[in-house]
Image (cartoon, rainbow, N blue to C red):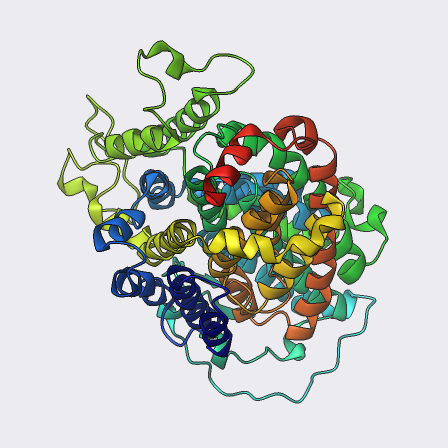
Amino acid sequence: YTFIHKMLITKTLLLPEACCAYVLMVTAVYWVSEAVPLGAAALVPAFLYPLFGVLKSSEVAAEYCKDTTLLLMGVICLAASIEKWNLHKRIALRMVMIAGAKPGMLVLGFMCCTVFLSMWLSNTSTTAMVMPIAEAVLQQLICTGLADGHMDSETAEAPEDDSDKEENFDKNQLELLYRNNRYVCVCVYVAIEIPNVKRVKMRRDSQYPTKRDHMICKCLSLSITYAATIGGLITITGTSTNLIFAEQFNTRYPDAKVINFGTWFIFSFPIAIIMLILTWLWLHCLFLGCNFRETCSWSKKRKTRREILSERRIQEEYTKLGPISYPEVVTGIFFILMTLLWFTRDPGFVPGWTSFFEKKGYRTDATVSVLLGFLLFLIPARRPFSSSSSSTPNDNSDSDPLAPMITWKDFQRLMPWEIVILVGGGYALAAGCKVSGLSVWIGRQLEPMSGLPPWAVTLLACLLVSAVTEFASNPATLTVFLPILSALSETLRINPLHTLIPATMCVSFGVMLPVGNPPNAIVFSYGHVKISDMVKAGFGVNLIGVAVVMLAITTWGVPLFNLNEFPAWAVARNVTGSL
């Protein structure tokens, strides 16, 4: 507030710019402190902008529902169908069966299936879906170790002095949690429920037969949250921060037709593959050691009794799913169809399917997702001309032969309305910065950085964003930084994509603390890892992520987005802003 007061006194800013800066700071303080829910804080521009005369109320309201909102709604429809018919569980178990029960390969298998699911579902829901499956495998490993502990050559880890109080569970603390998932072992009963992270009690080390078992539990648990983060980078819809970037970029630079599902995938997919391999190697060396021959061998002769029993348990879980059902087939077809239509809409190197329409620019990725999502409400879940039901034991569609693939309740249960409002608040802030001229003023104050090369500016932005996002929410952090980085790029005459894309990716690397993002909190709540484990492992993942993103933006990102030149669409925006 003192900063705003000084600006008003010295007339460094005009009144609209000062008012916009005030609204931006107030909203940022609420987001960082989380004094109110993030969605509620995102409504601050809706009443302060009209009161201060920055934007009309109707103009602010229009910012809260954009094309990406419809895109997210269509994707959530597909996600609801995937979860309702257990297609995600079938995919996860199948991939783990292929990987085997060797610790190294087991971790890699879970990471691969988590990355794949996180490409299409939210990081939080993916983690909540995969962790119960991983927990069942880990408990089988622990139970088998307790049963034949006398045959193990390793010495059991000494128990630590810890409280044995009963844990208090609060399912409402985290979104999209698996309910009614309980796994019974011969020796230990485990309730797969997510406890309140603030009240979580660490498990006693005596629960783990050996120190190696504890290390496997740590490694597998952390690998899932990191894999969910990596998978969310691959697609525009993979995480809310990608959607925020896409909408703000297209709003600020409407003439730039460079960001779509295809170009983003081409750029981010190699990043995800490299990060997946390096993260797996880092976690393996940190928790399992460097003897890859012992932990990654597919030879049946090298398998221990415990590994064989773990594989049998996974096979039993897969068998319980039964043969693939009609709703799963329909969901899989819709999944493939949505992906193909996104890729072929406007691939760039060849004409897309939108070229068959006379009017151009009317159809976007949201058109595809909403169309297919709507059809899921129409198509019956029972096979046509069949008297047998295709429903799962958890569904009540037997009573209605025309019950659709998903219902509105299924959609409502997964739809993250808080994220929708949060993203809308970011759009409103960006619109205010543009109209008031605040972004131009910020860019002028950053002119002393013009002597730095583009890669140095990008590196500083990545490090700053990845540090702030450890303590603030990812969407809020990106929403605050995007207008500043855009103005900086325009002032320094750097292609805005050179700074915006790396910052968007690095904002997802808040993986060092349980409060960094919801997947971290879900994994931490299972009690296998301590905060010190998360900090140590997450710091390495953070460095890997920043390094790989910098490698991408300076190599294959240059020809893909023509980063060596200051584009015409940015020149036009810069001239308009200056006027």
